Length: 162
Image (cartoon, rainbow, N blue to C red):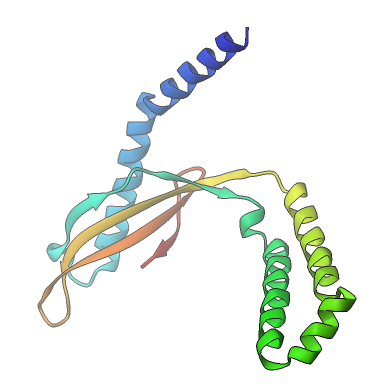
């Protein structure tokens, strides 16, 4: 029974990967990226596409949640303080190590961080598409540029990372 379920899931995954809608999505995102460039480049006649990546999913998860990242930074700060004090103020380091200061602070921040991670379910937010293209710089030199285009769930462009 388990083997049949795994085989069924594998077949469904493969079918989703080769679904004809994926090619339509690729074409739509590429077209929107090129339209953006033609309106944003100073002289679009020098625009020549070099390559496009396949669209990749943008997921919202705890890894890009502000509160999670703040707690994760706090964990890193405690570790950095521990190592800095180990080298610069060994007496203070030994005292804090003996009293469990570092471990209790780490446990607190890791617990908070992990509780945030457990409350956030990953959510599909859209797509990103990497695009390399050749253009001419202001000095007349040919240059290759790489942009990352970010699209929402409906394929609307909402950000360009240069």
